[in-house]
Amino acid sequence: MQNARILTMILLLGFGTADTTLLFSAQKSGERGTPEPPKGNLQRSAEILYFKRFAESGSERGKEIYFYKCWVCHNDYTRAAGTAAPTLRDLYKRPRLISGQPVNDQTVAAKIKTGGSNMPGYQYTLTEQDLADLVSFLREGKCCWEDFEEKEPPRNPRYKAK
Image (cartoon, rainbow, N blue to C red; front, side):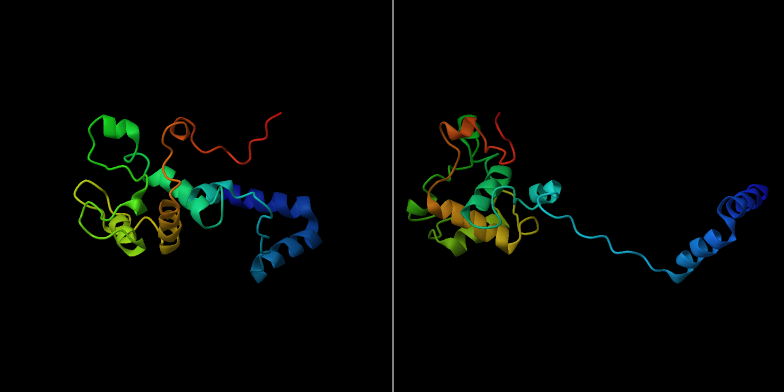
């Protein structure tokens, strides 16, 4: 209590009455300035979180989602080690999924959402836009970081070689 009185006296003596009135009136009114949103590419953490480092939408964004969510199981190394995860290369050239359903956008998206016996479901992790971008990447047939690409993950678009 004694310290609070001393601090009040120091504030009053240090600021003077006009400054103190101004200081306390700003606090009483409750007015706060609204910070301006950052301009440009300053929110890198949000770009990483929402898989938007390479593109805002489309198959390029789907490529990034695939790398972070799918590649960890669906790659040559884990298949060589004996995993049951099939390759997703040329997925849309196959007549059926392992489950027996025909290969189309709806069945592929449903499999990604619900998962299976050895695959986790991503219905709570990926949004509808994420699924659409991922499916568009798989449909394009450019999947899956095999061969030379697998040894070189996606480049950082902000890196500038000197």
